Length: 187
Image 1 (cartoon, rainbow, N blue to C red):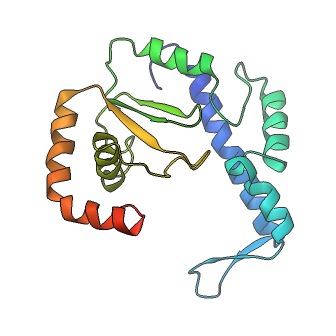
Image 2: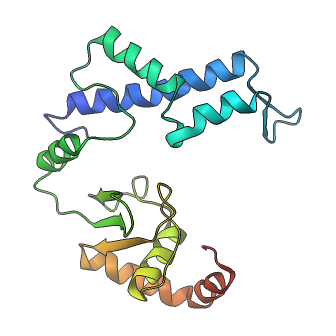
């Protein structure tokens, strides 16, 4: 995202995440949420408000209000929205048109689709998830990994080196993968 031409998208992303911080701070200050005395877990004191904030993965109600205020106050070129628009994704990919995607993850049931442009471990999902997802895709085994619709995600490998790494990992974790499938879970 730090490539030339994506400055507005970068700013939008930073402000998007800061809107989440504002909502969380509001909930803490107004005792909607708190921490157990030992700091081990969150306590919800106003379930109704908390539930309204959690809708659409935290992008509803108060978050939308904060995002609209920030967009207006800073006169952002790209308005803060809950999800990237198709145009923003096209701009991101166009700015990185010299980079071939490593992989894509998509859902068979809804329009969820994510493209990954590098092997950077900070940008990729956790390895156990990728190994499980790759094995599910390879074996046409259904899963319920889509956070949007609880549908079956699948992985499209665009770089053979990455496919080789995942194949080796699947072999290493074959017993665990079979066990998790029997139990209905993920590594």
